[in-house]
Every structure is written in structure tokens, then in C-alpha cells.
Image (cartoon, rainbow, N blue to C red; front, side, top):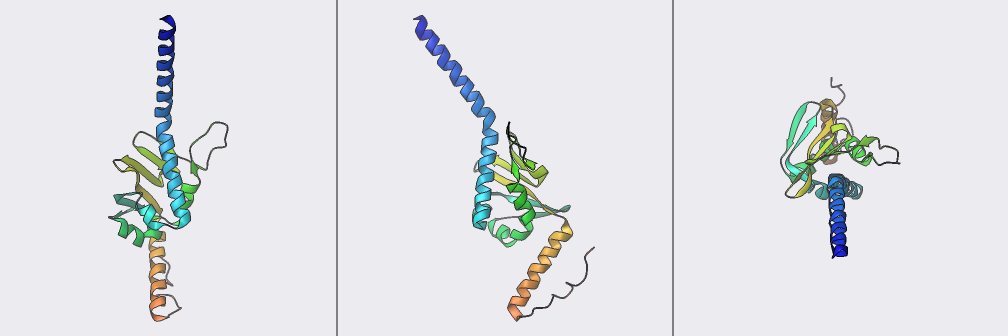
Length: 174
């Protein structure tokens, strides 16, 4: 009888330790899994997959200007403004602190509600559909505006065969 109580006691203690460890590792593991899915979709150039990892209405901070992205179609159209190369690099260079390993360039901050990448460049939050990006920071507003003008210029040149700058493209935005 004493052996049975000891076995039951040890089993219960082991279960509690494993459960506590899993609960403590839960947010970090979920955050890293989300980051990995995002990186895989970026690497494949799969904009639809990334759009599926976003909670709508996504809010993009473009240098103090808040830009709402209402749905997947809008995100795909605004791709370069929402996920410019700098934002994609922040995700790639982010990671969790791990003992015995050098720290990543950007330490991911995971908590009970979600994860933050790159000192606030991206915030993903937990919800009924799993982890979803809820906020991004795209850079300074004038950089976002400049990229938008470049896209318009490329679109015009494709339509009419014009290779020069779009009207107003030569002026500097301040």
C-alpha cells in the first residue's frame, strides 16, 4: 500500500511539474511557431498565406499615420506598405532569448495575450483563430508615401510604355 501511494504521489508530482513547464513555455513556443509560419510564407512569397495570419482590421502605423487594413484583399494590394523589406527582416532577426545562445538582434516578447517582434514593429495577439498579427509599423509616412508613388509610376509606365518619372516624382517630399 505504501508503494502504491509513493508511485501515485510521484506520478502526480511529475504531472504537475510537466504541466507547469508546458504552461510556462506555452507563450514562447506558440510565438516561435507563429514566427516560423510567417517566415515560411514570406520565403515562398505567399501573400495570401500571410494575409491569413492577420487579424482584421489590421492597423499599420506609417510614421504616426494610422492606416486601417480592412481585409485580405486590401492587405495584398497594400503589401509593400504593410510588409516592406524592413518589417520582414525584423521578423527574420527576431527570436526568443535562449540560455547558452547569443541573443537575437530583436528579442521577441511573449506574454499571455500575444507576442511583440522587433521592439514593437509587429504585434500578434491570441484569439479564437490562433495567433494573428494585429498591428504593424511600416516606417516613416514619407517613406510609405514614396513607395506608393513609385508603384503608381511603375503602373503608369506599364500601361503607356512611358519610362520617365511620373509627374511630381522628381520633387523631394519633406
